[in-house]
Length: 99
Image 1 (tube, rainbow, N blue to C red):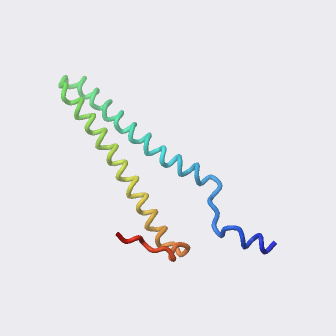
Image 2: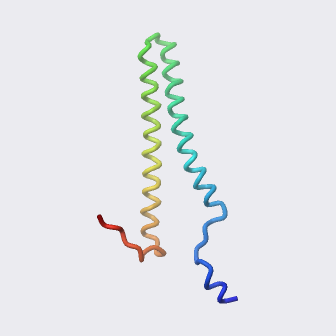
Image 3: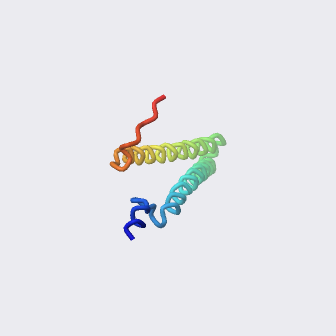
């Protein structure tokens, strides 16, 4: 029995770890599409209210800018997670690869 325990890894991946990771990545895609659609909707609404054709493109720009901001936030979240992992005692043996 003790031999079996020594062969098992010390840390195990959570039961639903892959599913949670996939949903988190999928939510970034949904938020990007939703941001662009909301921007287009705002642009169409402002176009109908004001009658100016060019304001639709302003809404599209706002949507694309919001999607880019969502990518930035996801990047910062991932960077923070990697920094925390770097300070984890389990991974202290590994060193950063230098260019």
